Image 1 (spheres, one colour):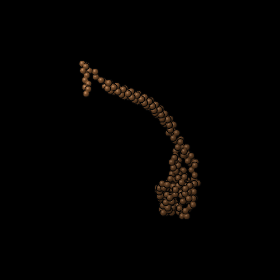
Image 2 (cartoon, rainbow, N blue to C red; image 1 turned 60 degrees about the vertical axis):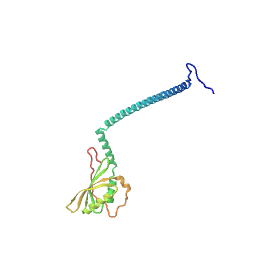
Image 3 (cartoon, rainbow, N blue to C red; image 1 turned 90 degrees about the vertical axis):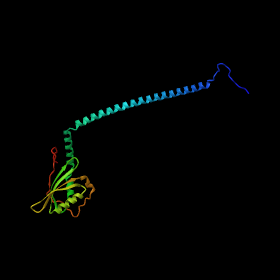
Image 4 (cartoon, one colour; image 1 turned 90 degrees about the horizontal axis):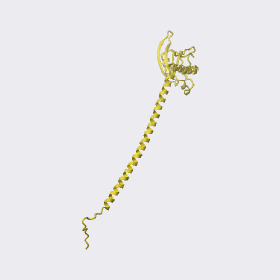
Length: 217
């Protein structure tokens, strides 16, 4: 049996494993530091790029806001009360020129009941619709009610309202009716005349209302 003893006054110790461990830790620390440095540099680069992009977007937004302000100012300068009044006048003038009295009276002739005649008609043409106020005469209230029912069922007329009625000395009943005329609906309805309806009596008074800035037909 061999016993190995170090009898030296100062024995030599083996630090190789210790130094190897320290070296591994040092290399790991250097690699970790390098990784963090590269990540930091990449983040700073991305941050700078985003800052530049944000600055460009803010500049474009400011330019667009300035352009919108200029456009609103120009529109405000153009849309003066005189310009709006002239535009409305031209639009109404065009509508008056294209308004067909023949088509309107043909439709009245098609739907008026036998015992009702038209006394007067007052169309008012505006930007959105054509409003008509007319006076009719019938032999009784049932005739007026029948006319209102026919107008309400006609596609070309809507918002039919009986305004007033009065008895005449000859026994006839006169009534004022308001309604909205939609000529574009005429193409969708039949052209034949119902058997219980006849044309209005001739001699109708036709009058066209005007706005203060419009000219007559």
